[in-house]
Length: 94
Picture 1 (spheres, rainbow, N blue to C red):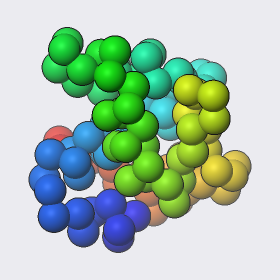
Picture 2 (picture 1 turned 60 degrees about the vertical axis):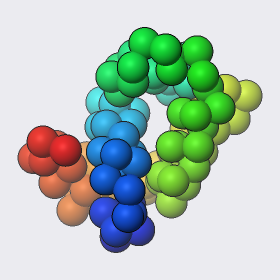
Picture 3 (picture 1 turned 180 degrees about the vertical axis):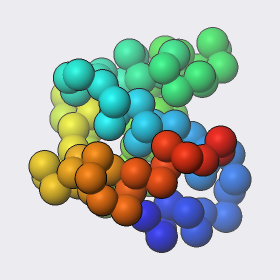
Picture 4 (picture 1 turned 45 degrees about the vertical axis):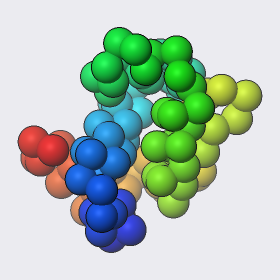
């Protein structure tokens, strides 16, 4: 989490946090195309899965993409956000 919060680009940091919030609260793994509108990407980027793939890559300590769908790298990564210190991402307005 320190790696994400330490990103120099504030916009990338905000997008990473939005991606993480979305994936944590989703009932099932989301495709990159589903994730685009949920993370409030500008409409012109909704079909640019390469851009969103890069953002998810910045979250690679927690997430991975396989065949265009986002997954947690391990159940413990999701647990970190549900029951651990990671819950703090839901208190941030970033």
